[in-house]
Image (cartoon, rainbow, N blue to C red):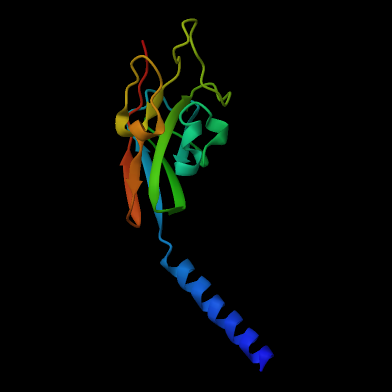
Length: 151
């Protein structure tokens, strides 16, 4: 009898776990950039979720996910599959010389193209996650972000 009770408990727990897995929603997120000034190099896209929010925007090696994509005719698209529904923020970097880092000029400003989700433009300091977050809440999200180049 004890064996039967344990077996029944295990079966019921497994149904509960599989039901939760089926209700967890995920999406395809496409981050689209249409205004790159050159097809040279790559577009690097770093995606941050709530668990990685403290690393946004300047600790790109600690992002939730990263994609490096080719540029064609000044356009690029980074596709993130099976992203759980939730809040995210993204950074973009046009890595012209393919050195996998944001190059800065002598004043400390970016010398390569950059962008932030919500098209936030920092004034005196880098923004935090909350200022750049957006919602992923349906099966497919196409999210455009502008890239900016300093003179």
